Image 1 (cartoon, rainbow, N blue to C red):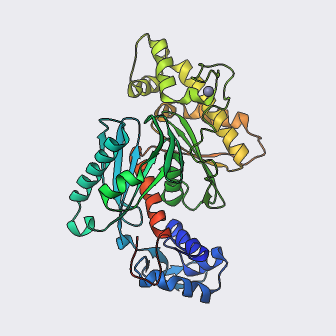
Image 2 (image 1 turned 90 degrees about the vertical axis):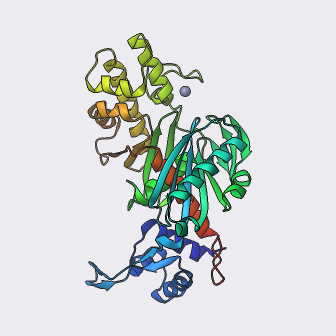
Image 3 (image 1 turned 180 degrees about the vertical axis):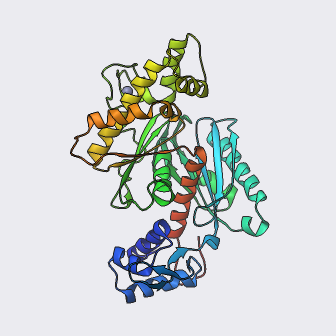
Length: 381
Ligand SMILES: [Zn+2]
C-alpha cells in the first residue's frame, strides 16, 4: 500500500498529468528533493513516465512533465443500468480503446456478472493480444448506495446487499472495484471532462433519477455516496406528484415522470427522442411541460450552485436531451433564482452518453489499482 504522500502524488499525476514537477511540488507542498525521492519508484516501476520536453511558460525553460504511463495497464469500466451494461476498456490514462454494450437478460447478480464478464471478454478480444493480456483491474458503477464495494441498495437492479466484486473478479481474473455511478461519473468529469482543471464543481445527472456529484478543493466528495439527497428537493410550486408523494420535487425531471406527463398531454405514449423532436419544433402540447421542466431545472441548478458555493455545474445523463430545446429558459431561471451580485453559474452539458459513465467506472478502477501499488517490489495490482 502507498503512504499518504505517495497516494497524494499518484492522485495528482492521475488527475492533472501531464504536470510539471514544479507544479506538483507546489500543489503537494513538497521540496524538489522530496518530490524527486517520491517520484523515483513510480518511474522505476513503469507507473509514471516523463513526457517529452515542453516549455514552461512561467519559468521560460524546458521541463519534463510527469504523467501516468498509458501502457501501465488496461482497465475495464462497466456502467450498469436496470436493463443494460455499457462497457469500455481503457489505458491507464483512461483513454477509451474499445467500447460496447449489451442488454441484461436478468438482473440476478450471478447472471449480470456472467454477462459483464462475457462483454468485457469480447472487448478484450478486439484488442491486440498483448493489450488484452495486461488487463489490470475493472470497475463497475451502478445507481444506488454503494459502501465498501457492497451494493447496499440498487433500486434499478432490484438489489439489496449484493457483493459484486467476489462474483466478478474470478471471472475476469483481476480485482474489481464497485462504485456509485454518479460518484464514478464525477471522477470522470474531474479527470478528463468539463471539470478538468477546475478545483470545484457540481455534477447534476438527469435520467432514471436525479443525482448530484460534488468536487470541492480538487477532491470528489464521497460522504454520502449514492444516497438520494437531491432527487426529491422541492423545485416547483406545482407539477406532478412523485412516487414518494411530493408535488413539484426534483423527481419531476426524471425520465419516467416526463414520459408520463407528456403522454397525458399527447393522449398517447411517446418515446423520449420523439418528445425531444416535438419540443424542438415548439409543439404546443409539449411546450408548457418543457417550459415548466426548464424552470424547475434552473431552480435546481441555482440551488445546488448556491448551497455548494461552486459556480460551475455540469449536466449529464440520458434525460438532458429535452433541455436543448429550453436552454434559454433554464438560464433565465438560474439567473432569477441567484443573487445578481454572485458570479454567474457556468453551465456545461455533457451529452457523451453512457460510455462516459463506463469511463468513469474505469477511472475508479485505475485509482484503486494505483492505491494497491506496492512500491519497491515487483509490479502488483
Ligand atoms: Zn419526490
